[in-house]
Length: 351
Image (cartoon, rainbow, N blue to C red; front, top):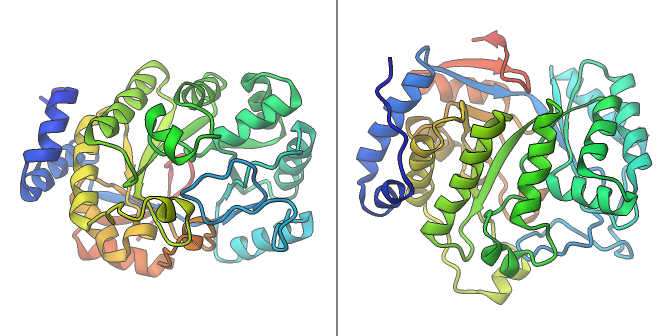
């Protein structure tokens, strides 16, 4: 029986600011082992499919979006999407992370048709798609509730939703880095409504812009409370702001780049604080494969996706890639047991 006691916001702040990295590694590893005593580290074989890069939200930290009239703006055709899924199936993929820019004109019927097409043609592929900001805008444009949007998409084959768009769940921060984006209350409400429909989701955090340590803990507090209420989050994923080619880096050139120490420190405290989250993912895509591997010693029990395709953070300067065998090797190298999983964290294959 674990004697783990829930830590307070004050204790979390003290750990972030005063604990040694060695101590944090030890505490988070102990906590991880309580939750995952078999030392299994999982990963998923999937592909990011960004069905459009057209977006009106203009987040200052994003280098991916385009406006509808831009020369390189696009909406993928069904044929283009099918080709990407065919390629994923060839390497044993099980999931697509399916999200796009927030298109100013696409209503619910477009999304219903799209999800239905993929689900009917590729019934073995899990559709993990549509961030809270997309759900919010589809609801507004279609003049229906979050619950109706989610129920309609679930009926067509949507399995779960990603945690994108959380950034920092504090409106003072959001007003600076993404003033047009939905506020904290609405992000949480989209996920609450998804969970009530038994659509599981993930929670994310992008740190390293203008937020304080206290605002990071405020973010954790909000998702921990919602998880207490619904139990609908499968995992927590955290990454640092990637600044290349972004407006935010131009407007605030003195934003310091985030160190590996800072990433591991926050990850470890997240593992201790988010006691009701079974899984924490390592963000090797932004941190690189070796810090991604080290994250397994700081509370992460999942390496995320082999990421056959990634367009958003790569547009902002992160260009790391890894195949299945490289993931297996990294996991074994730190004395853990690699396993391929599906979206729901069911083990498909052990290595």
